[in-house]
Length: 356
Image (cartoon, rainbow, N blue to C red; front, top):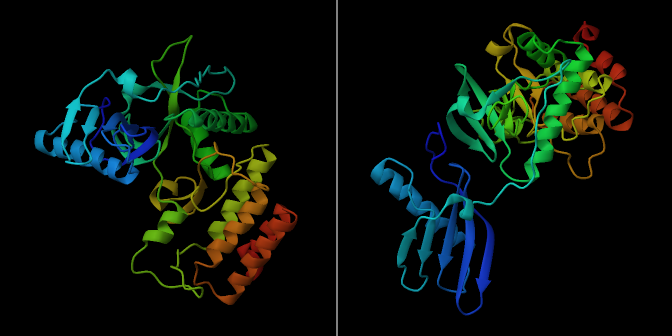
């Protein structure tokens, strides 16, 4: 098992398959939850991906529960007709799908993000594709890793966007703690605590991912899992989001625009709820904040951040139990964002003081 990792029930996906007609089929199976590759060979040319995934999950889970550790085998040979199985262990480099794209991080003197060695992250635990919960310096964090080649550009873009925010704020690179607070307060963006490298070295910093504070759930997950909630007029679960929270989020996006940073994928998956306890240092007492995460992906057919934010406003309105006045204001705000992106007009219109 990966160093300093906590076991999680396997979640296996097949990433490549090869069929030899009339003979056999084989595939590369990846356990997302425990970050390990397997080879699966089946003595039949009848390839059932779901069955293959189930075979791998069942046997690596059974081994762990029987022996309390990850299985030594990384090759599974199966016979479809009679269900016979055998196991083998091969060098990992021959089984794992290699990451060919490489990313290095060379901190700039003026604005840079701290670096930390991968081995300093402990208690890593699966949260989702490429994301683990972990502990670093006694703090709960989210580690977003380079898991496949497609992740390299996204992680690089994440790093560059945060450096541009530091540059816009004119903050010294050593003032990390204060910089992170200001980034979250001014831009409603989750900061990067550190760039994680394979081994800390002044000349060669091979990036493995980025380290961020562990925030609350996304709006999407909240909509899917919030129990015992009120039901909005549209029949959806009431998220409890307020007009004031959406105004604060819009203000943060406007600050990003002024800093020359484009998010490029604003949606309900990439908006997290920052728990009130963590935001009372620089937000209204007892108020949860909406914060942006995932600056790395560029959504296909994406128009712009203002338009996407307008779409998000409508999505939130449909999952609220607001009164008529608040609903109408959010509808008007969404129209402004989608038609001309006039943030100044939008913020003035959503100002609570104008209701008095």
